[in-house]
Image (tube, rainbow, N blue to C red; front, side, top):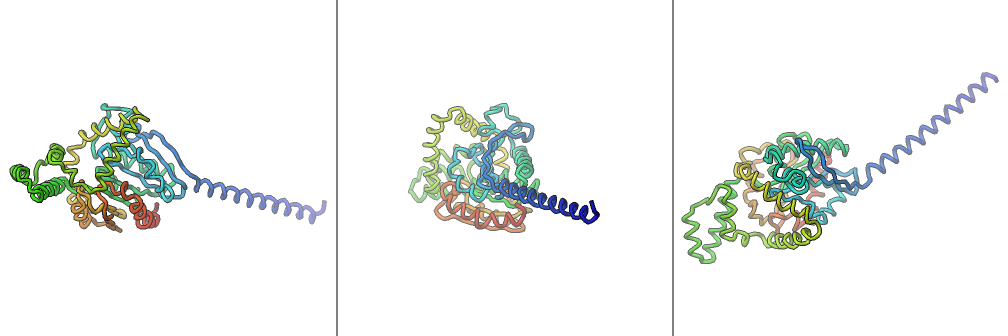
Length: 354
């Protein structure tokens, strides 16, 4: 064989190998793209803070930013509201988490669940954020805290701001003392407006701001504070009661875990709730900061949330108030809430690493 023919054959083989490499790399790229855009639907128990905790991960595309929902209550796990979250899954990978002492997680350990405190639950949330970043190949995630969950999510962001592209608060908590004063004033104003002299005298005898301990809930029930809730919140409470009956019939064990978990966790974290004073402890937030709040919220009063928002220093912050909505705006005005998430939060979070 001549040198010329050997060179020609060698060149042909090299070209063939080069062509195969291009085809293989192209197939790999397509497979990777398909994998990254594929739908995800998983439930699992993951080890957080030394115990197994239940999570659900759902989304139409793995390429979307991760949105971790930190539920309120305390203990009000959100998996029963699965249908409300379905539209969110188009633009986000939505993660539900039954916190320590709540829902499925409570079902694992019951009243023997250890260390049910704001600090420990917040650290569990940080561990979960690390887990999600690693398993979903994300640099950062978005965290959404509702009511009690806004305390947990705020603490999470304070502990590890580098894990979070954005914080979103709704039913945003601020200060226990301000909450108590505001609710007392609302009750007294209603009694005066209704001409209910007996209640006015009782409330004035108690004195502003009323009970500042765990008995505050009994105080509110005695004077029918629910009558002051936004109408949308009252309708949502009616829905939850109807849903509870259906859930109890369909999944009696999980319903019991949900109900008992709320009772258990609520009792455990009362001291943490009473100690809440975010304007003094959490004004420096080192990530994008959003509050999407029902304008008529009196459960975690919007007035207090707005005042707290003013003190927050963050790289980017925005307050969105939803009219004709209250404490459960993310459920009762879910279309407007989702619009704010997709148009306001999502682009900022993506730009910041989500």
